[in-house]
Each structure stands twice: as structure tokens, then as C-alpha cells.
Length: 252
Image 1 (cartoon, helix red, strand yellow):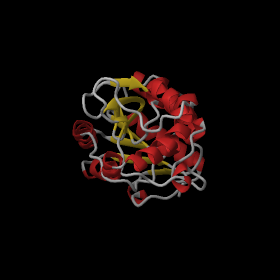
Image 2: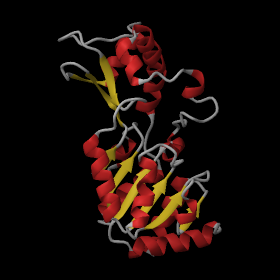
Image 3: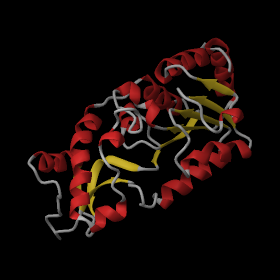
Image 4: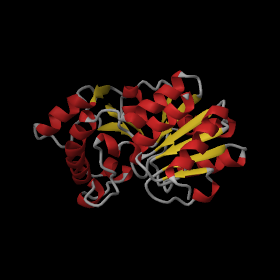
């Protein structure tokens, strides 16, 4: 693996040469904003059982488990702010280099940073909706109900089940977002992957799809992935710090 200095030089050259960059981001880009990876030691998935979508639909007890976890998670998501990695991607988009951000995250930090073309494969925590009639609420409104002790919120219009507009285990990914992501992967000439373990399918295969279509890959991730051997540049440093240096190097 290249040392940071040589990785920076190589990455800057690839970014300067690229015309259609696609960013793929996972939980690791938001850890520097204070959001813990769910899978990390002590993360929510160690402390709460994963409630699947079918369970959520069928069981009152499962919904109470689900919303108990959400009651703890939502304040952290709402308090988080974009870090230099999010801001760097927004800057690349504003320069015309970056066509889109495809994210596995639900925190909305890319939009807060100024990114405009964001494809959220796993939905967004910013809103909740009735699964029956489609009425929407800001997640802050639902949080007030949770903190008031209502751990099975229901729609005030039709009494349907309310759920955050995020994708749960056992729930289909939004087909439109998924199709758009793979179309962009086939059209891009460079992928900037930041903070993903590339373990969750089908998002994990986006870099492979891009590579097979002729794109170069830059991976900025603390840990190894199954696709590291395909990357032109591997970076294990802080995503925020590296993105700052990368943008400076591209402008020099």
C-alpha cells in the first residue's frame, strides 16, 4: 500500500484527469462527525436486537424494540454536522467534477454539506411516513412522541403504522435509487469510495461495476475491503484530512 504522500499525489492526478466522478460513501465518512458505526464495538447493533421489516409489520413487541433503539439514535443523527469529507465532496460537485454521491448512510449530512445530487440507497432518517396512507412527519415530531413514552406511534389520519423512511433488514431497497446508482457506476470514470466496508449488497458491488466499465478506483477507508486489489489508490488515514489535502493538491 502506498504511503500517504504518494497516495495523495496519485489521487490528485486521477481527480484532475477525471470528468465524471462518482462518490460512494458508508458509515465511515460520518464517524468523524461523531456518529458511531452501528457495527462497531459498543454500537447500537450490539446493544439492540435487529428488528426485521416483516417483524416490524407483524409484532407490537418488535415495534417497541425498534422504536426504543430509534429513540436513542435519532438525537445523535440530528445533532451531527458535516465534516471536511462531506464538505470536500460538495466542493467537487460544485466544481463540475463530481456527478453524484451514492450513500449507504441515513444521516442527511451530504445534503447539509451542500451536495445536491445525493442518492440515498438506504433512505433517510430525516422523515417518517405512514405505511398505509403515506402521510409524512419530520423525525423530530416522532421523537417527541417516543420521548413521551409512545413506542408504537400510529398515524393520526388512518391509524396505520409509522416508520422512518429508512430501509430495514428484509425491506426492499428503493428500485429507482438503486437503478440510478448502477447507471452512474457504469458511466463514471473515477469512483471515490469513502468509509464503506463494501460488505452490504448490492451497494458493495458498485465499485466493481464501475471498474469493469473502465473506471479507476480510489478507496479511503480505515479497514480492508474485498475489492482493495482493484483500487488505484488505497488510503487508511482520516477521510476528512485526506479530502482536504486532496482538494488542495488538485488546485495547486
